[in-house]
Amino acid sequence: MPIIDPERLLEAVQEQMFGTENPGFCIKCGEEHDGCEPDARNYPCDEGCGNTVFGASELLLMGYGS
Image (cartoon, rainbow, N blue to C red):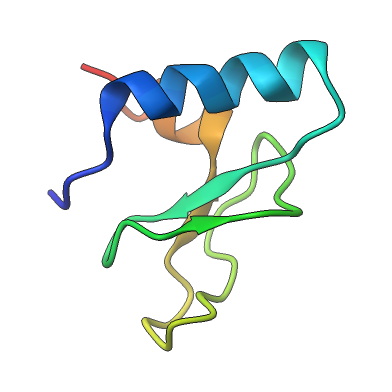
């Protein structure tokens, strides 16, 4: 499992819930992406990793915040 900073993931979930930001993260390279729905799955990664970007809330549900 790639390293996605759990603290940053929790911050991103809060941004989605209480703000106007929609961050997501690539599960292959760990890069943060903007414009992802909270439940986004398999969005394309700008770094060329394929369809590996997930919304922050979705990642939390998948266990990435643990």
